[in-house]
Image 1 (cartoon, rainbow, N blue to C red):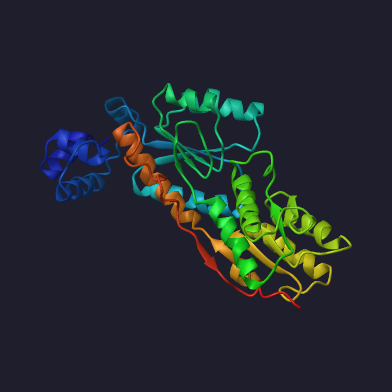
Image 2 (tube, rainbow, N blue to C red; image 1 turned 180 degrees about the vertical axis):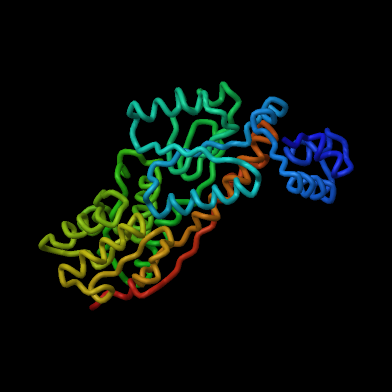
Amino acid sequence: MPAIGDVARLAGVSKATASRALTGKGHVAEATRRRVEHAAAEIGYIASPDAASLVTGRTKNVGVVIPFVNAWFFGEVLEGIERALIGAGYDLTLYNVPPGGDDARSRVFDFFLARKRVDALIAVGVDLDEHEVAVLDRRDKPVLCLGGRAPGAARLSIDDRAVAQLATEHLLHLGHTRIAHLAGPGAAASPHSVPGERRHGFLEAMAAAGLAPGGRANIVETPMTMPGGYAAALQLLGQPGMRPTAVVACSDEVAFGTMRAAERLGIDVPGELSVIGIDGHEHAEMFGLTTIEQYPEEQGRVAVEVVLRLIARGDEPDPLPDSGAPLPTRLVVRSSTSRPRR
């Protein structure tokens, strides 16, 4: 079996230089690194992760916790994370942590992540509590939250409040006053969650327009899925009386469900009902959905970039990536919104 000494002799460098080139530990000139990698590939040398971790104290592995593995947004984020980690020579260990504090979640943090050989954790759309952060902090494992929150952890996020405010202002600008919001689960009870921030943005835009919550500003909480949006919209639009002329959906999938419910009830979109979503789902253009786009795959790449900085420096990047610089979003107007009928 080839050894590091064989690679060093073939590349014409010392064993220490060959080791640095293959592990990424320490500075090596780019031309030397390529020569060493070519030599390793030529003789079939594969560095032992266990041996490297004994030398560097690192495993070249990043843990990722995610609440849903079958939802479009989280799948896109995960793809961006995986590509970036592979490009940086890192492995990924994935844990599905559904919302709520059940025993399975406790095992992930108190057993698997505490003992698993990972260098850091990326939490995607998951709020971590003080105990969960402390478990990792005691073992010097940096934590980065993408979309969620954790005490003292670095965080990347879009400005969810501003995004919902912009979506509502788009409808107000078109002339709508009877606007409803299909909010995510727990939006009222958890004001700092993603659904909670989007609910706040909706209410702030309505209040600024002089439209107080109540009869003219309905809010219904629903799972952030297409079936959730469909069921909630059937109830909202099927009620007798003053029906809303526009809906701000907490996600594009909820918006898709709303459009399907309107179709079932014989309500024309956008003639009788304007619908706007949030996310920039890959099917938004097919549905003609006006939406606030965000870029989850790119967010995954940026998250890896930041977490590798955390690993390398052992402290927080300066400045933190979320200090006054939310991740980018963009309003994309399509055919699901228009002026209300007189």
